[in-house]
Image (tube, rainbow, N blue to C red; front, side, top):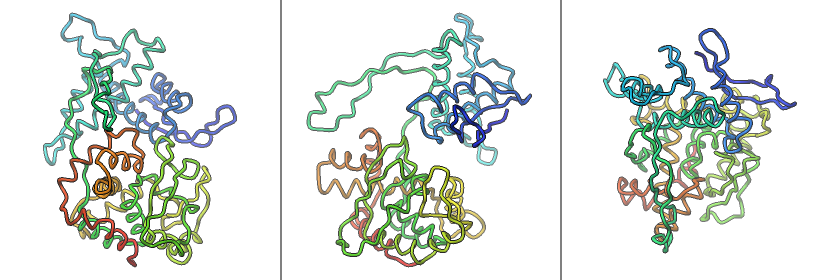
Length: 397
């Protein structure tokens, strides 16, 4: 089984589509049911417009169909009721196999339950689509109604009834862990350890705004300006638009950048490493986005490239920092400190709504996980975070 992606030679109705995943089996034949579904996600379904979403579904289907192929199993097999052995669906058997995998070096689980649930959610979407298409007679799991608390966090939240939704007996019960984030001291050490001004500014920008990996990588030149004349004590409003950069679900939102960081970005583009890299090889991407940050070759960073830039800081024979860090941990760090900062100015419900909007979450319920993170931080760190970030932004590499 192989997982491949379309390039600009894949044209449909005069339009090229790049990054759509598709599967080939061991005989190098197209895996039609899976590929039909992936095409549906990419070309027809309006809610799945992100290539990253396509990739996630493609990788889940690739792993599942590889397992099916290795065990000579049919994806469309429906369990026979009343027969204990055949009553186990292929999807449940795949789940059981996945959760049993361990790492030889540690003996620990190779796949986190939350990660497996994400894969199962993708696969359930595939089976639901196949059922609607008439390709299978039923979906291979039992659904049962359950109540989910509403998202309202206001004064009258008790008056809002819980919503009823379908539960299932396939996905694992998972206890949500607090997000992994950095302490203030770790954030400072990370910024100091960055080997280039480019990486340092990307780090500070993510710590100050909560940008995701792809959002930082595609943060556009057009948002940067000389802030001279503005109040240095006030953060600068920046409206993010999906027409200018990559945003999850193409959802626009507003972030706020410290005066010193904006000035550093302006100087970086005008005189420093950014200008050098631009002269070395800047070119607009196919989408027309002109990002601030380019790698040493003058090209936009890839997701893997930025992840590896941080990995090199803490792994290897001579690590520059003694703790693990990923770009998404910077987003968690911002969210926790921003929640504390806003909770001192307004009620916690309003503070959660503010952070929700800064992060681009659809629900306050998603943002509320950061409430648990506040207990993990020192009060002195929480009180000085914003000031320290401004100083970090004003530091010189």
